[in-house]
Length: 251
Image 1 (cartoon, rainbow, N blue to C red):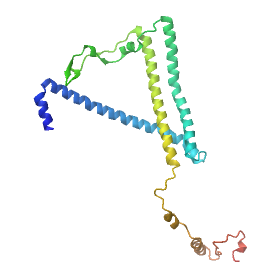
Image 2: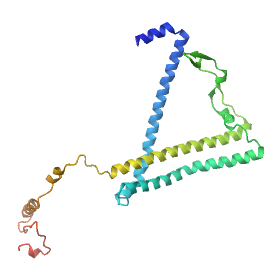
Image 3: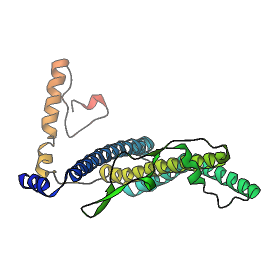
Image 4: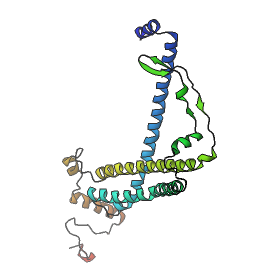
């Protein structure tokens, strides 16, 4: 670490040091934002996959599904049905936007119009074409920050672009979320099929099971003692005989 600091102090100018600090800050912010996005995706995956337990719990408890193969088949069918229902609004929005686009371009003849560029009037974005760049260790980086930003404006002539691009963005984001939920449920279906019907004997010991088997003579003696304590005239039970007629108890 000391050698690196000495190298920086000797070989880099003050301007290069400032650029290095800015670069390190950007790298740190990138990892923080990336980590937060990953945590959010993980939480959404867990939330979406919990739907599998809701849909398949009764099928397993009441014996409708009895093995892993049928569990996967039924789970996939339910997952496909849920995806179709959830993604229907996105498909409808996209279809409506396409119909509007065809009608608009058919009337105005503006088939080559840049709808996305006109929609950019509504957002902030850096004007990099007017920014100054310098060469830093062979890489082209901004000479100063922040650069000038585009200020959102409203143009009545671009109203159709505002409408169409907004519909496209809503349908795309909606479909991405539905696809994420579909994949999360599909992974959970395969996981549940393994864990619910898993025949794992790794921790099983035969002699532990044998030691837990109850001797019928011992069980019968315990029952007789309990009956005698509760009712002194109660007949003694024979562990190898279960007479249906109470008069046969003393035979």
